[in-house]
Length: 487
Picture (tube, rainbow, N blue to C red):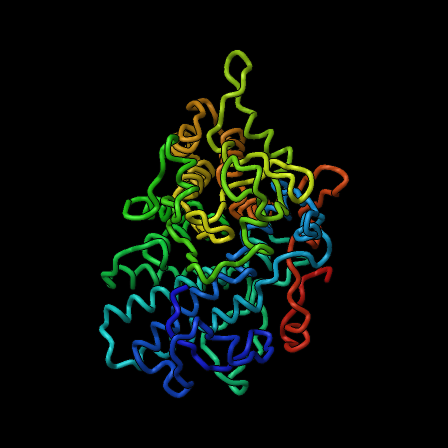
């Protein structure tokens, strides 16, 4: 992605499986430096940061799993079994869940090594140091949040009788086995406090860095947007609304699209609504087995049913499609929702043709190569609407809700309050962010059951399968690390 060097530093994952030199700080090699000099120069520090962005491309993270699996585990996606992939997740089988524990902690360790090394770099301007520190703090906060979403309960819905707490907090980097500390799981609130601290620190450093914001890198707007999301999950309505407002105030990135431009925004190389986006170079194509394009659709271009590309492993459920058609006018006719245009009939090249999600159709015609929006500005309107509604600010919540509704082509609503207002916000959140990796996490943070159509069984929020299992090798290596209940 953005790599320059191949950093040969052996290290350990949190649970403390020894990783090879190529596991920790690998980026696309163009030159090589050894571990003695690896993080002692500005070029090496920049290369190390680039390496963290590269790791975010992993299939276990944003390359596929954090985007597709939340749709499969919840009620938005239905597995077609055309390749067998994501079928177990769709059925909520035991152990078929997120598996980014080790990858996330490898990346966290990379961020920690950068943060540890920065004060020791002499020939580097303070502005550049601030920019690097801000990026490392943002990414570390982001990854701790992704670990919390998958492996722990949220504070307001914690099932205390079975909860094992949060995740281990690792604050310093390690480069060999002698530096490892076998940490246990911090409390849920301790981890959220740590994430808050990272994001607050990043916002301060981005302010002084003077760097131009771009969605391809961590930036101040993205940090504010992430803070809004984290606070929403924590039930901190004040900060969720505040940071959503801050993120939307800049206007330099994350440009909200009109109804007329909505479909085109998903056909451009870079989604113009992206506040933070994982970007791929041509030689980083994930391929026909696990890219988001092959996961979601058999199409290679809109409307082209003569050429088959991917497998279309995960397609929208009937319930989701019906929801797009649920808005009626006074005569009872369906009011068209522009977002429904992102779902169309695929090819029969892999079996029965299905209606498929086409949000990811190959950047600039390059099959299986898509940049991945992690945070879009649309989410900020929805975050703020929910936070305001739950704080009793009906007028503010309705205003944000109607921004999303009107862009979709739906009429303004004015008479919703209380539970009816919140339910409509959550409905629009489901429709707006479908197949972008939110649905399972939204149900989980709300303490909601997952209702699925027969023959697949629904699961209640109290079911242990709501949480992912920590890898067995991590548990075996660390007596202080407690496995989630049921595994």
